[in-house]
Image (cartoon, rainbow, N blue to C red; front, top):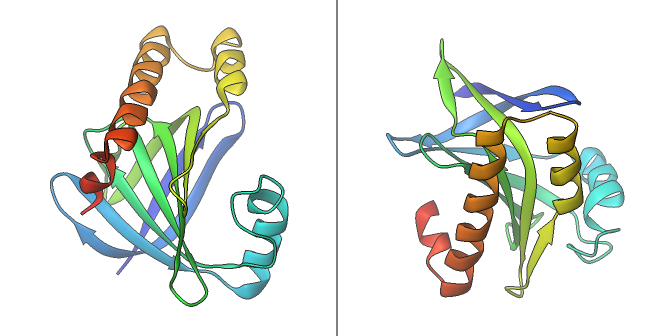
Length: 166
């Protein structure tokens, strides 16, 4: 079954994703999208390879998303063209809301990457501070995002975080 996810990036507009439902329960939504080779190559060239998150030449074949109803983050697992795990990208965002059968989240700028080797990379902290200064998020969103960011880092380093996905 296909579903629509609206992901608002304050200051940049809203992206609308049509994805295949894998599972939905009271805690989270799990989706899967298979990427075309053409899209994957462009995405890897523009995002993943320059940042060193995925080795050059390795393409993303599919994306599995874990979107939570009561957590201030979502997780995107990248899979290679043979189904191999390439890493986790964690977005700090508002808890997902379901309205009229569609899903809505707001990006809060902070992100984390967990590489296939377990390496943790903090991302977009300057962008986060700039967004707050530009009034693209409320004081509550700012405080909550910073707190969740630090909590997720602690859970990742303790090995507890990935248990939330399954």
